[in-house]
Image (tube, one colour):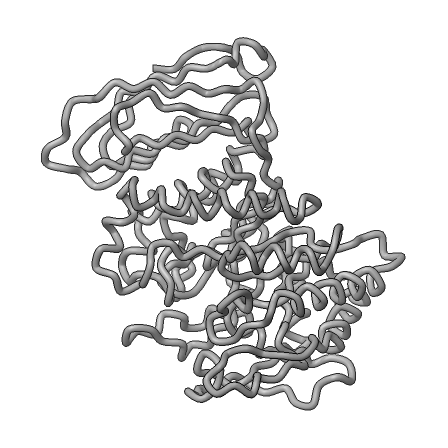
Length: 455
């Protein structure tokens, strides 16, 4: 099985990269797959994509790449969007993002106004508060039902808090006021809409981004959310998961939140990853194919796995948001074929470290979108996500690549919904091809697809 230079190999499908003038003769390599037992398991709906709140005048580096792609204004009646999501037959979509902690839900008694986002540089992230009206929530849920979407919804976690008195501090103090969220849940249940999981807050943990909350207080608030979910959904036959904190990993903060909230409260510990740096970085495309750079994030996955094991063994690690490059991604980079080197490597690596769900920022919007923001036509990473979803089952297998080059990456899973093993090979090199032999112990398990090596 040859892995040409600049090529990703997923099962037997080759996604060809750009041609190169000089490619060295194939370097022989053996990838061993240990199929006797899985080293970890993902959720069945491991692949996830986000929808964000950003209005069309969200801009970075002199560009405004969001257009009409937000939860509020995305065209849910587009046949292209419908077919793209329906193709997964169970795509998880996480609704959330930076502005979710400024959202009012227009339902019940516990809201005073239902404003639209407006630019204001004195407010968090440069925007005033926004609003989710229930007719829009109805439209979203009709779309989700038609496309068999698994829904994760991020709640406003700043409601009821106030900014600390310290000059220049981003710390917010006081307990979470969940009454408006409770009214949204009650409405959701009354309409028969199915939300698989509710997540509290976005990027408020540790140092935060533009606002932060202490771990002890957050733990108490997550416990309040858990009790609210149990009460609202009592007798419905469905109990949604509770997720938190939806921010960048910080070991001590995450551990304290889990300790304070207590056993059985947080089902998914969500963290965010933007390990490629700024979207305007001129080295962005080189980072995507640099194995040494890509390996750095393995420490975060390992630390996150250890935190969950030691402080919250009842829970599991989720990547709640990851776009590669922050601030809307890199123009003409994050939406191109080259980004799949980073994206597929992240999916494989995170699964090895016990990650249950991986949410890609974004389904639509920004430069890192799976679907083109204006036309909704699929970008290359859309097909990477779809292939993974269809071929890679939840059982994660150990692989070892016996090659002298760090540019050959290998990941393997039990095949999805059928016996066998699916292998992902990534050649990060622009100058070296690999002639790969896949070997393993599949012969010990005839039902897993036989013991034939592939060359």
